[in-house]
Length: 317
Image 1: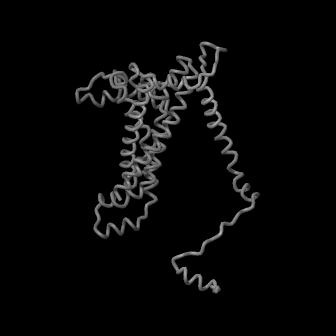
Image 2: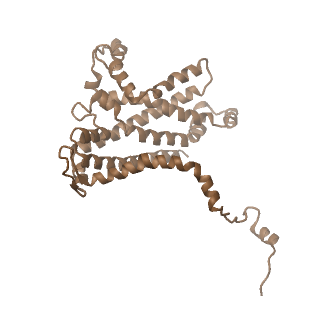
Image 3: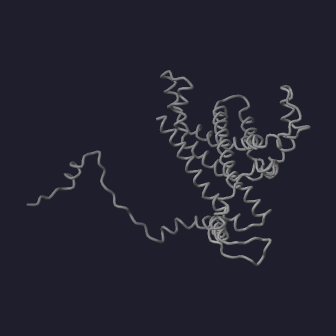
């Protein structure tokens, strides 16, 4: 025996907490392409500027080609990858890239959060201070590297030696004696404004009513920051870490202009290692293989950094 259930009875059985299942409305093909059409030129430019050169790089990574031996190109298989992975200088460049990227991202993020909290407060001259703090990010990387090399790190008239002279520091050639510290200092100066802007955007999107309610309940500034502000900033900090990691792992200008990868191979990171292989050893195959490995490594680093930051926030909850 079959029973017929009316639509109203079915809704009553489902209960108020269970919404009706909605069938997905299929839009006409023409309407979908009309919506996607404005995005196609930008997508085409991205493909032309990124994907096609990457495919060409993959092709050359399987070729035994050296510009000192023109016309002698041959298929090398995975020999270039084996040679690169077995090169101790490449392993040193990998370690340096990891250390340089991690140290700069962590320091720039911490300083960026502190400066963003400062600029989120109202005080006299806030717009001027905000402009001055953003300025380092607006300077071209090559120009910033030259400024730091000649105006900050110069052993004779550098500002850094002058500022530390009351503490007995005189005529220190920072670029030669402390090259890695010099690079970290310069990059933190350059990338802290970038982190600050992202975190500041997150702070200004915060609901002021929640903060006011917490303040009325007797919560102090520190407790409010850890319990309310920091969880709200999670997605903004993740974005800053991811973008900062992508950009900083590809640092080339300061290393080329300040330290030249030295002394020795002390400041040779992956981009500078590829430059040496391509434009000093003229080995197209090995430099292309190193470039492919750098792309893969960048994806791994970004994924690890994102999961690490997400895990830290989950532990706080």
